[in-house]
Amino acid sequence: MEKNKLIEDSGKFFTGCNYWASHAGTAMWSDWKPEVVDNDLKRLFEEGLEVLRIFPLWPDFQPIEMLYTSEGQEVEYRFGEELLPDTEAGQAGVSIVAINRFREFIEIAKKYKFKIIIGLITGWMSGRLFVPQALKGKNIITDKMAIMW
Image (cartoon, rainbow, N blue to C red; front, side, top):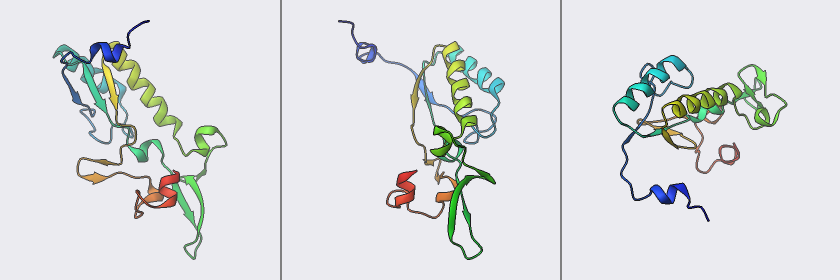
């Protein structure tokens, strides 16, 4: 039986860092510049880093907004002015643009042989809360819609 690679490497020391693109910080997914990311990762690789922890920000990957009536009643979730696409990702409120940027990031990281740790849903980062527009002002731990999304 083949050993699990993670278990095999668990006793080894490695160097790494939290990563945000140098040009944008926490806005890296919305202000995507793959050439900057590539240069950043190349420089980190040249300095001997092996592991990167990355943070897909919740509102970039699930950019849902709520459409309201003139009386303030909730109507439906949307991507800005657009209806949620009738796709599996669209109905989950997931941005294909963000997913493709994430894929591109992973390909760049592979080029430099980085291991990646992903903060799966990053709502709190750098001293502030990042949530989709539709969930602003809600308790994201207890609100039923926040939990659903």
